[in-house]
Amino acid sequence: MDSTQKVMTSFVILLLMLASNIHAQSNNKFNDAEIAAIAVAANEIDIKYAEIAKEKSNNNEILGFANTMIQDHNAVIEKAVELVNELGVKPQPNSLSKKLNSDAEETRKMLRSKEGKAFNKAYIDNEVAYHKAVIDAIRNVLIPDTANNQLKELLEAVLPALETHLEHAKTVQQNIADQ
Image (cartoon, rainbow, N blue to C red; front, side, top):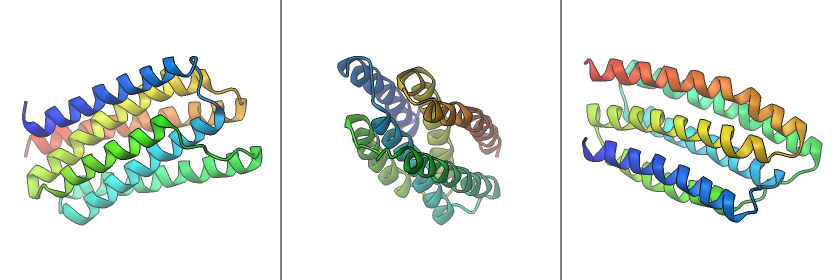
């Protein structure tokens, strides 16, 4: 396992442990405003990763995947913003959304330090790990904690797209490995 894989594996484990710990410390409940902030942060983070990919990669599969991430995650943010405005809920930063953002900055630094094939591998490995972690957090923490049915429906509706992203990322990861 190379250093990039170790960083990605550590990040996923940290994210899952953090979500579980924060979830337990918060009386097993994030409020809807906190859930909205976590959802927005997770989408914004992946958009920023994709923007780095568009700057650094010349690989058509990586660029296509990055464009999909930007388009799809911006669409989710738009839906989330519409919903929270409709509900009168203001996303409330919390320990998990703040930790996601600080950890993401470290990942962005790592991605910016890579070039060529090493960048492509680091980016797509991160995307696989990140989507697995986000899917797990949505399925096992955010959906169960959501009180508002419309917010819960939005989170449930996003899961199939995230699962599609994960499968797409795994395909690109395999194709990159075969090059």
